[in-house]
Length: 82
Image (cartoon, rainbow, N blue to C red; front, side, top):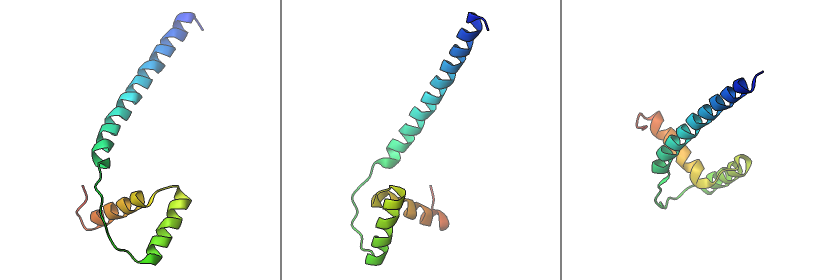
């Protein structure tokens, strides 16, 4: 393989990486808007909280993330998704 061929392949890879980086930046912008949160107080069955905590440990997730996911799924179920 010629040096010019290697250089062309490297340039192609760099262009591909730049495209990927741009996509990630765009996704981060979308996530940033969704991740702005407010504090909410709610009451739940203690058994559900224990189960959620265990799930959080198993999945390496925090309770807030699990509850947000559950609420989003519930809203989708009833046709109120994004």
